[in-house]
Image (cartoon, rainbow, N blue to C red; front, side, top):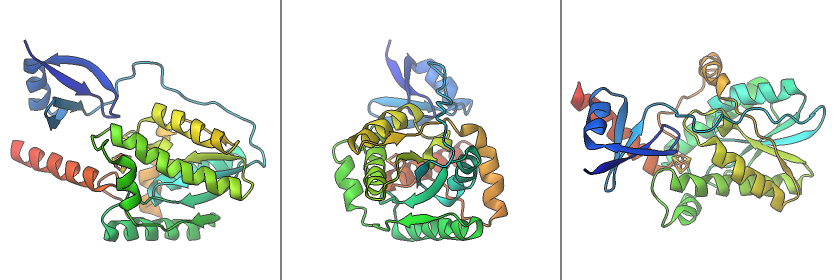
Length: 247
Ligand code: SF4
């Protein structure tokens, strides 16, 4: 009997299942095919193998934090939430993973619009040359695997800029996303922050995801339809095509 590789929606590897079961999951719309070789399906929900990491609360009153921001929508809730906790917050834009250039510009403008409306202090690194992203993920292009290199690229730069500016803690707006691997973000964030003798602030902010969508509409922000890199754009396109074909 052959088995099928199974991921959950965060890219966590689960126990393999039989071909028959994978076909049932695909037919029911509970999963999608992400790779033919090895044959791999991704469930459309998160399976919690261990208790989800949640709060690791420091006492932030007045402490400085540089928040890496992946896009305007994810910054809506996360920036407000962290400021409400008492952090002295500065946002940081650095996302050379976003492709193509038109999409990069849309997301950049969207965050500029938000930052202006909510008076969020920002540092902008508008390096949009995706070569550094492709160099970083070279040889690790599979979904899940490449994200680790993508996180590291962005969080390394965040830590570097925080250290230059005397900001003691870093974090990321990616921590709101149900599509990102929070355990991996935490691990990489801690490592990159430690390299510069900084702290990484981790909190599972997914409970704010619905508020993110509502706030994005309220601020008139562009809502993207894929994670960011060209690979994720292509995967999203393929998912849409499969969905259309099955209707
Ligand atoms: S899917 Fe998203 S997190 Fe993963 S490599 Fe692409 S842009 Fe980065």
